[in-house]
Image (cartoon, rainbow, N blue to C red; front, side, top):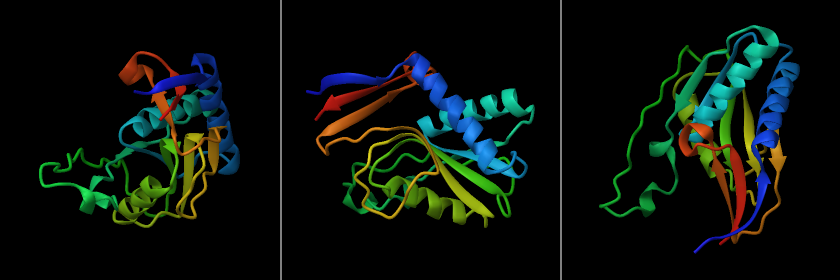
Length: 181
């Protein structure tokens, strides 16, 4: 049974974090020309769509948004039983990513293994000019040399703690909670 320790991002903080990340993406890339936001399924897609909306509000430019399914690129597939066949959701990229500035978007960065799988999946679809990483929460504990370029909030956690990101699109609320094991 998970015990909620505290809410670490409420609805207002969630909105502010998304606005800040959108501004940082624009600033780092000197605009958004040739940028493509690619969300890692599932919540990364909703975050990417929100960032695209914020960027449009700020710059008046529509940034393409893609969806990345990393299921077959995960390094833990060999640990599944035969009864646990992976559910493929499909990758949908709106443009050829070759030569583009890709901003890969996910909700929580933890060990880095999900991002590694996403990098492999992206490279199979083309050769981007650059790949940047935007995450809502960076909780530390990396197992691979991966770091985010854009972070909503750094939340140092123990390995026994869990982060639960809730989003309006799925959970009817924007909130991030910290739980004990």
